[in-house]
Image (cartoon, rainbow, N blue to C red):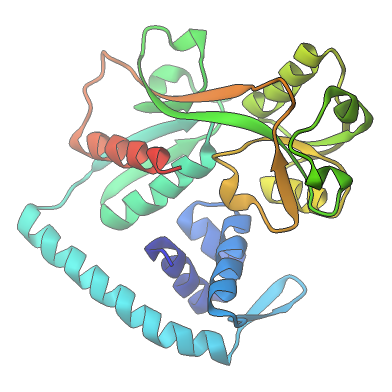
Length: 288
């Protein structure tokens, strides 16, 4: 069990609303739902009773909350004691995340818990602002950022994800001929995600057929799990989304990588808050 998982659980227990909890932690609702299910799996009990789109903390959940909330409160007291010795941190960090939004969101949540007086803003597109408006930019290789300093955050490998009930699940890899026969599930408004699928088709000489275009990454895995299609996903950054109902397979004779970088304008001096955020983001990315 991780501290962030337990924080998610405690807030969900207090609100009894996964959507509200996700909004407070700046993460997708699917992150909260998956975290609770993982906790339930580890404990081998249900913590919430589910009624359609609503949830209610059950007796097991209430008992678990009574212990965990006290533990988190003790940790918070320790954090405050340390802050009294080291001083508080404040300021503002403007972040643009064009890739690896899950990692950035997780970092934002952790950072906010440690430094609540630092104002954090996150944008996921350039529709309203230019690059110069941001202190930090997380993106793939981008020629528009050639003058920026960049640090490699993650080198990821795209792989095919199939249903564990599929005949392909027993193979070591998928062939071009098999991919041509399948329909793909992809993610809407994701340049790197769809670019990788396009590169897959170009390098193997076929046009991937699209079955479903999703807004939420959570449903890509769900649709694959029930056999509605296959998907081409970044294996490292999506590893926590995978379920026992799916399996990752490489493509025979082909490997497509995705490098994600942290960009910083060299003309702008990093604040102390920004330096701490960068260190945290690099550490989280290196652990994937």
